[in-house]
Image 1: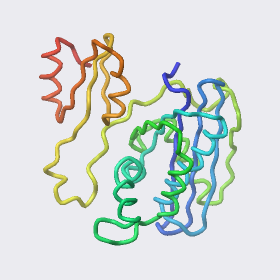
Image 2: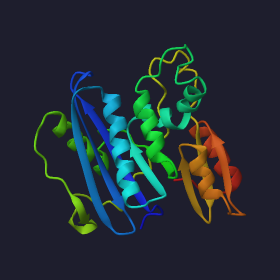
Image 3: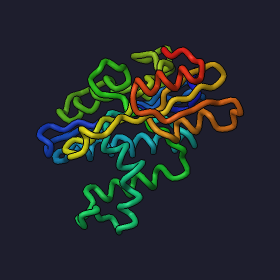
Image 4: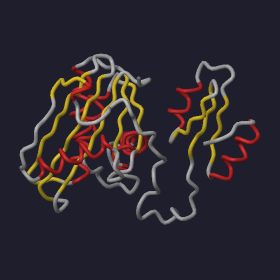
Length: 242
């Protein structure tokens, strides 16, 4: 069973961007072994707003079940970077960008902060349209609602009655380089690796790695930027990677 008490798959879709859009989430409660889905639409919106709305509504679901920790799986780099990196600077500048422009979707960022308060979140980037069951399901929901199509929704269904095996959680991967970044070609992909009690794990960010190694006196961990560097680290540790 998962190490997490709950996880949340989210996705948003938009036709035209801006245009009619939809959002969807799948909330998985590993304690009650129940699954809850939610979805909605907006006649005039953007893809980013739908991605954010899916997370906000999913977190509201988590709060209704009194969850204090959750894993969120999404293919939206905008949401992940916005919540884990950019929002702190935005807030310090009174919700303006480094260029002095108003932050887009400010009201949704503030709402996300509000519903996330008191919940420990681990974000995991899972690339879309790669056959990952959870991602495919929320994408189906978001697209259907953006096109005003009917779709059967699950509400409190048990694991064995659901459309895919929710106990198989994808590992995720490092966030891709930002589009349009002038230095993206020069940046090296960075991830973290830990080795605890014979288990080798890759992490896309430090908080995930820290959570794994904290309190483990014999834990090994390292920040690496290439497969070659990873091989050298594992060789130094005397560990055979997969």
